[in-house]
Structure formats: structure tokens, C-alpha cells
Image 1 (cartoon, rainbow, N blue to C red):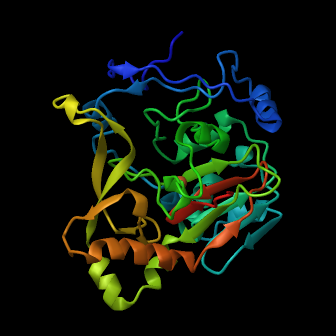
Image 2: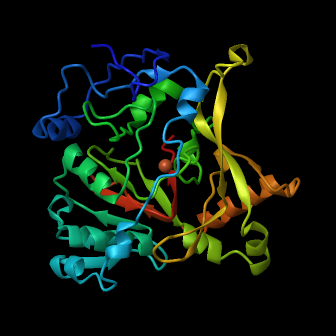
Length: 334
Ligand SMILES: [Fe+2]
């Protein structure tokens, strides 16, 4: 059956391109073990919506959100006592939990993990036996899972977005001189009305060299700014745009337009109450309360401050990273 759009309300769409890249061995093994139907190819691409208005309408209402960390024991005793080891990787960001399988966590441990993610921004688990179904189930436990209108996902599992650099290269031709958005410091999904809470990345195949991701603490990036600078950005909003563009139904001849949404430059985590820098230079259209030419510089400076705090995380195979209140950067390998 030909692919459809992600929701039945979208009836004006374009059929997606067909992919024919060879599936890497470890990915195939993981998907087959999980019983994923690969007979129609991999990954699955939903039909791409044609019109901007239809994409704006996706998740376009205020939705309740209760962070699982609010239910957690502040000592995280159930999670920590079950782990073989809990290692902080840097002073500001990143903790690794050793000796636990994410798929086996109890609800109490999941809540405590959410609190740990809130505090440490990135939490890693290596050597995971994790199916895409289990990954999706954990995502649903933490909140509503984002389903992208056009990026590929695991067949049959909306919300399990596939990140595959070779596949991306076949679409965008990204290179050192033409980096894609994820190769600069960014927070994810800035075009959403409610951007992502926890993001969960699972590596099923990694290259022998490269494939690394850098993470920066949004909390530290904010704290390290001068008090004067913090005053400039506190309470200020930026207008962000989407990575993909769509035709305006009322003015199709104007050409593709981007989704635009406004968000604060400084966000407060609902559980820790800590302030965090929320920037995405490539997708920032303008700082809404105009501060003239300083606006672009602001994004640049905040971006470069983050690089002082980064921690390079090696691409570990079968490792999982759960991320919140952090900025990410995919290290270029070319
Ligand atoms: Fe990202």
C-alpha cells in the first residue's frame, strides 16, 4: 500500500522517494529480532504534506504535560541501588548508568531516571538490548511522542525517527562546506508548538571512527553568561523556523514557506526550576523583541559559549542517550 500522511486529516500530499540503501548488519539484526516488517523496505517514509496550513495544524493546541521527574524520590534510591555503577562523566553534564537494562526499569525507576535526566541533562546506558517497540513505550511513558510529518521512521512505529547519515546524505548532500542544521549547536524541534522534553537516541550501528555527538549543558551555558548578558536574554523570545518548507495553500505561487514559532531564549525546567539556554542558531529567524543588529550576534555568542562546555561523547554501539535541557551537535566526519 502506498504511504499515507501521518494523520488521516492530511489529504494533500506527495508520495515520498524510495530508498534502496543496504541496511547495516547490526540494525537488521535488531529489527528482525524485534519482529519489524522489513518487506516494504526500510525505513518507512510517510507521504509528505503539501501545504503549510496542514502542518501548522499538527499538535497545534496546548497539551498538558507532567514531567515524570515530579513523581521521583529525590535520592533516586530505586534506580541507583539497582545499578552496578553510576558515573558522572563531567562536572556539568552527563551521567552513565552501568548494569541496568532500560527495558526492565520499573515505573518508579523510570520516574527517578526522568529526574536524573533533568539534573544531568544527558544520561547514558551502554550495551542495551532495546527493541524499537520498547523504546517507543518508554517515550510514551514520559509524554506525547513527536511524530514528524515527513522524516523516516521504523516501519509500523510512528515516532521512532530514523537517523541515518548515509540516508541523509542521499537527500541533502551535506558536506563540510554545506553543513546540515544538526551540525551546529541546537535544541531540537523548535518549530513545534511545544518542543521536545526528553529526547531518546539509541545507536544500533556506529562507524568504527566518527559518528560522535557533542552535548552541552543548557543550564551551564546560561549560568556562565555574565549577569548583564543574562538580563538581556531573560524573558526574551526568538522566532524559530522549521527545517522543512511547505506551500501556502492561500498563496502557492509564492513558493515553499517554513513553519515559524516563537519560544523563550531561556527556559525553566519544570522539575529542577533551573534556567537553561534554549538556542538553535541555524533555525533562528529573529529575536522577537528587537535588539537590532545584536540579535544575530546574540545567537552566535550564546552558541560559542556552549562550545566551552562540551563533552564529546563517543558513539558507543547499542548505547542509549536520554537528553533534556541540553544542546546537541553532530560532529562532522568530513
Ligand atoms: Fe538534534
